[in-house]
Image (cartoon, rainbow, N blue to C red; front, side, top):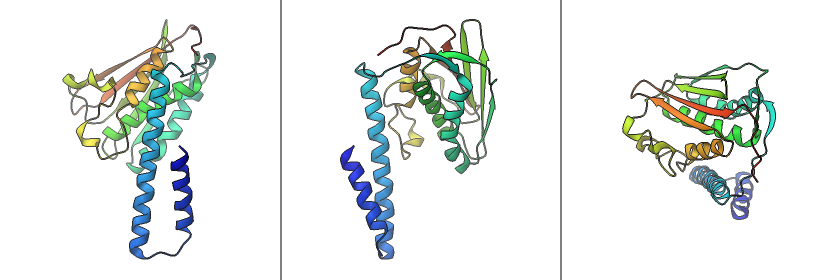
Length: 213
């Protein structure tokens, strides 16, 4: 991380200097590439921590509404750029045992995926329902949908649809989401048809599980 932090610092110094139009263009491109590198590195670090058993899940009974709100707040800027509307239906008093930090990460990854695959002026619908044994978080988009033959692959490491290869990403978001839920005794399902959008259902148990460290 230190070399990237240093490069960002040097970029800030250069931004204060007077450069030619071409120099400004190169500086902007360089900044974009550094941001991509930083994004990729953070994703690899998360995956490494998870796969080496050093991801700490600390569960306590708390509001899933606040966790969901944190994830939504992170995705709003990207959704706004594509004029994608986000609709949320979640009662504020629903409390379940979960790790807020990592569950927020899991939800954000699904939302990020939805924004990438939903065309401009589309919609994402989020609902939270308390069931007998699980709390279900449904995230439904109006995107292009996922072919049936690819639906099992999307939760694998490094899997990416061809049309988003030019965007930031490693293809590990849904993989991390699946693993984070499994560490909390939960699971994820996908329901999708081509050209008819996708629905991801995240399930978290209502009863407490043993902390994993």
